[in-house]
Image (cartoon, rainbow, N blue to C red; front, side, top):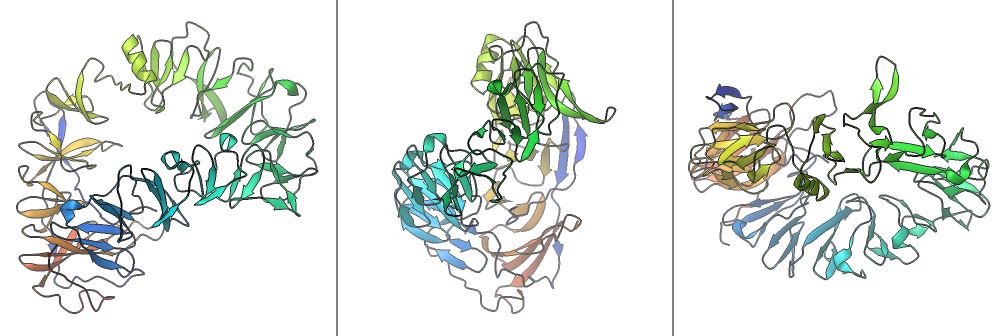
Length: 556
């Protein structure tokens, strides 16, 4: 589910040119629109669709769809953990909050393991213990407890056992467990359905691969249909989707036109690609041969769709001219036959390295004559190359293309006007930065990737306020001014409009209830910021679906 609890705005940029500097994007603070009749419309949720902890200086308020409650902790004493995609968790120095409720516990080693039950329940752990919601569950080794494959799937494992959600599967073999997320799971022995050995007509189903299972006499697909054309006695797995019996080779349920040479069958089946070699030819999942590839030296690079033979390294592309998929050869200088000994891909898949050359397949850039140090960095998954920074020593990396080098701040390889001596992030895990002169927003992806100066926010006092920015004067959503910041508290968040389908171009909206020295304020953030001063007391009718709204003084 895409999270829209907080919606941030940033106007299109104006570009300013500095001498010998990069093109710098600049925006100014925009005043909010005032609407004296603004109110929160009734919606499916009384409050907000996604759970959220609102942290003020002296109070914390937990919200979800139909719950809103004050927590006995100050905002500065509460932290939000990593990978908290559903918003369930918050921590203080003595325990864990889950959906607004509290368990006192040593939080050393706290980690969210996964969400289960349509993401409405959670598995999490601290050192030596694993919990489902607030109930400790028994696992053999808590420190190695982790998803079997999908982060929010139904199957989990530790070094000794497989678990279906919070239940141990004593018959499952952890060493041969295959990737699984929902419902079905298999190992070298059995097929499992919802954590139990699967059966058909009261006969145990033995696993073949991701597509097939069998009893002693019949082969079945995952929808439990029998396939009498397949021989249960001789069928064997070749990969997650390829299999073979005494007479035929199959991809999923389709018989492939491969004949003979069955002793030399080898399959590659990863990401979005599937290939089969019989030692003489390379076959694809659709049953077609790839006659351009050498079967004896064919291989695939791990965790990718890239492949190779002794003649080169390739990827599949579609040729409009030929109206078919063809092999695009990467532009290395091929001085020796390609093999596992002189070829590898970095763990993050950024670079493919052949001998002393690295290729960036995403930006189609080749780097030659890599030093031993850079080759070592590639193997350690720390290599970061670009034409702009090849000869620069990076002193500090703020983001992939935003860094400090030679006493200057660079963005995408070009020097910026930012002051290197005072340049720092604003808050944790944000794309906002500041120096002694300005506040910046960094967008590190897509065509709009740039460092944008926000004129009008005070860099000396700027800080994060929830997911907003705050300085000595105002609270901001991106570069949109909202309300005065003095003694401001965020008291409520309410789900607004959500686009109905892919053709709906109307922006999402949310409503926020604040209080400051000037009283209560209702703020709507959508494609713009709209505000309404509600006065020193909450008036009737400010929310179509709420008649009573709890307010407490900041006493914690």
